[in-house]
Every structure is written in C-alpha cells, then in structure tokens.
Length: 199
Image 1 (cartoon, helix red, strand yellow):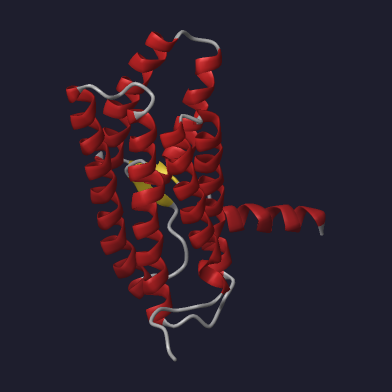
Image 2 (image 1 turned 30 degrees about the vertical axis):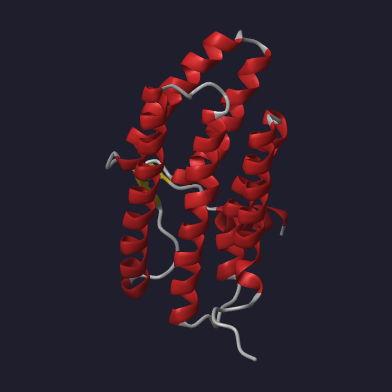
C-alpha cells in the first residue's frame, strides 16, 4: 500500500505545529485562554525551526522542497490565521464589526501566505538558500504578538483588553499585506555564528 505525500523528518515540526494549534483551538472553545496561548507560542517555536530542519536534508528533490513550502503555508493558515481569529472571538472580539474584522484577519493571512508561496518557489528556482528580508509582516509573528498581548490581561481590566484586541485585529492584518521590507532573523545562521564563537 502506498500513500501520497512525502514522509521524512523534514516535515515533522510542521505537523507538530499544526497539532499544537488544533489543541489550542480546543482550549479556546473551552475558555482556557492561557493554555490556548501556550499552544500558539509552541506552534510559533516549531515554525521557527522547521526551516532549519528541512534545510538539514541536503538531497531534497524539487518536489520535496515544493511540498514543504505548500505544507508549511497550509498549516500556517490554521495555526496563525484561523486559530488566532477563533481565540480573539472567544475573548471579546465577537460583535458584528469584530466578526468582519476577524474575517479580514484570516483573509489577509491567506493572501500573505499565497503571495509568499509564489515568490518563494520562484526564488528557490533561481537563488536557493534563505531570504534576508520578509515582504510584509510574517503571518507567524502573531505567535509572538498575541501571547504577549494576552499577558496584559493580568494587569488590565477586561474592557481595556477588548479594545486592545480590536486594535490588534485591525493593525496586524494590515501589516501582513503592507509591502515593506522587514529583516529576517535566520535561526540556522544564528546557531552557526554561536558555533564559530565557541570554536
């Protein structure tokens, strides 16, 4: 029996990230905001290192590379698009206007990810390696922004937090699709520099 897809260690972290976010959605439905945000942060950490793991396999075929790109973005739609929107809905962004804003949030995340896929596939065919800059705010940045914002609820009243969540729901998706260059933190190069300093 043969299964479609590519099965090797290069995609494990992407699957772990997806599973973590699905658990987070469950916690959001149950009203366990802290556990939901812990799952979102865990998904973000997995996403930070999945590229490093994938690039460690030097003999990847073009099909494997393209599969990784598509898989990563499809999972990102759920992890960093749908999941944050669900969390925000259950934490105060639940008015008619709020629901419209959350729809736009997910829409902008999808646009950003699709645009990245087009550029990344073309870039890998001509350049290879890792890009030095993002175009627009990466969708995965919500895995840092939202958990840090959530921590404010220990200091601020609920009505103030609701306003902050509404502002976040307007500003962040706009930054997703704003065409500005943002320097990229490259994890594998960071560890390579650390290794050089130790040697």
